[in-house]
Length: 223
Length: 77
Image (tube, rainbow over all chains, first blue to last red; front, side, top):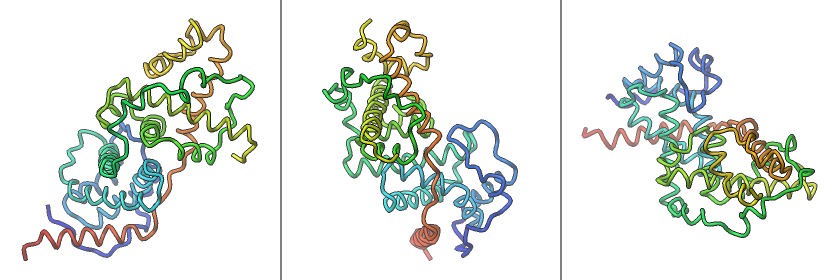
């Protein structure tokens, strides 16, 4: 495809397509994109740089937020967002519409982050070790008095704080499943682990979050 | 079934997609009911509370420069 025409057009001015798609879609989308968005996509696939800038505007928040949650560092998340859109620029002509574009881009972005984490040597490949029960995670430690139930007492800051303290492998699976909405079989394929491993790690991630949130409540920390 | 046995099965029970709330053990165990409610609260909070944030304003300029650089390296002329 023809590569960029290097048009210096800031992608921030709202367009009809942006207005239509201002509420960015979840990873699993079953309805076709609005015509304006489909047109922008087709133009971007044909090498239109302005259309690619619009694609960036439409999806930047979702891609950046995904990267940020997975790595927990704004600067690193921006680098990964940049890499995701560079890969998108290289590959966008190959998108055939078998899945929603947002789903495709989301998956591409996840792969960028996972590759980055693997390069850093984070324990994505030692998931089986994380399945081994520990005293900290074992069932006996997950008991809790009903009067300390979390229901209705979690807010965003408390949850973000607790998530940031999760081990990388636990955080990844929690984000992919509970935040991004992927199924265990999809996560297992992405992380090259078993479905049982994905279920187990998600459960342990939630147990750790629960322990952290309950501790914060007991200490009376602002949540 | 003891609490320990139930909790050892929880990951698989929850991951199966079935309604764990109907499990026989939960009908007689307030502790495990509270645990399950907490885990569901956490999962719900993750879906509902976390914001979608924008990247820095200048990120597009960086991407644009990187695209230009990549294009120029591919251009034999």
